[in-house]
Image 1 (cartoon, one colour):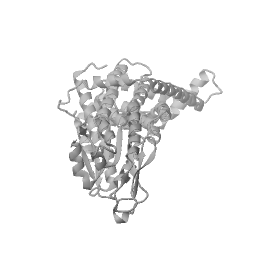
Image 2 (image 1 turned 120 degrees about the horizontal axis):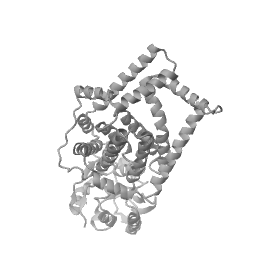
Image 3 (image 1 turned 90 degrees about the horizontal axis):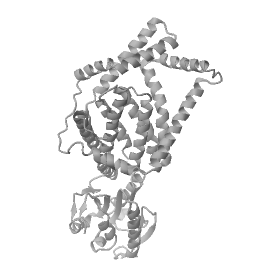
Image 4 (image 1 turned 90 degrees about the vertical axis):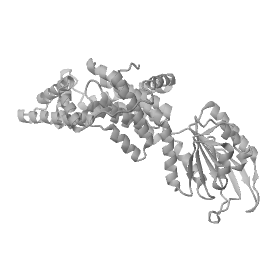
Length: 483
């Protein structure tokens, strides 16, 4: 008999809602987890009497196959069990698992049959609970005997006599998310270190079109992560990566953090609604690609105001007139740019989805997890106002920021047709807003965020952020050679 570790055990009296909770979980988890298992249900129960039903059926989650399981003619009689049907479904589930492992296995209404090595004993004893999260339900009157027989270790007990069903459902989903925390932290560390290392190098050497390249890299990695996690935790990865960009060694911080978060947000929207599949990844890639254009316009308009928009339109019109493209308009140019970005997104999606890059994810994850030992004490960077204001002020005299400010200011001056006073106000506005952005980017208090997440019971996100922060902090200070 295998060791039974990390089980989630649902219990409660008859009619407490154990099977209903298992049914609800199977529906709620199917979009983002690969699930399988057995559900028990009946249509001949008098819930008011608190008695067992006259018959039970078993339903295989993976194949949607339903077979009779137990029946009796009158209340008080012993059940007649059709054990051969349990063996049929067990064999089919084990055959599927041999081809494609599942994330979660739900086994509803286990009990004395399994203790007699019948029913779903073979399924319970074969599936590796260290790789697959097992969720089982057991009647309360036989729970103690059941736990002693199988010698369960490190299990979580959900008692529906004391916990409302909806609250129990949320608790179980949070436990499943918590199991993903180490992987989410690892993946967030991969993208962050890519941004810190590659992004800072591209900034330092003034490489052109670096934003397009980094957006494409983010798109590519998010598709690979989505395939590994079936779409789970992608927004958490994006949010952690955006926050940890504040560790950047060169270049600005606020603008990349803004792009990383919102590009990732647009990518995850189709996956949130449609689940993880090729179509949702393709739609997300296209949204990410075209968002880079609109995010740039939006951010510069927030910094410089509407004169930036007017100047941009006039610049495009001047370029079209210079090249004698009199039949084209600004709208035509925007459409062409968006089509090019959509084509690039399609190519990235086809590449990431059709080629198996599991070896790459495994190699990067192994390298990331060797950067720092798990026992290393985590220290948080200073984020007090004095330090943040001082750092934000230094960002104002960063060569790249000054160059960008002068370039965009000149374009606005010559093409927005402003008088001198209005132009001075636009420049002052840009400097003040940029300064506040730099300060806010440095004011992120990771320690406070982690404590807040723990207090609000978002333990999976707190654990993922803590792991990523530990790795990235060590990488930055030790200048670890990773890739």
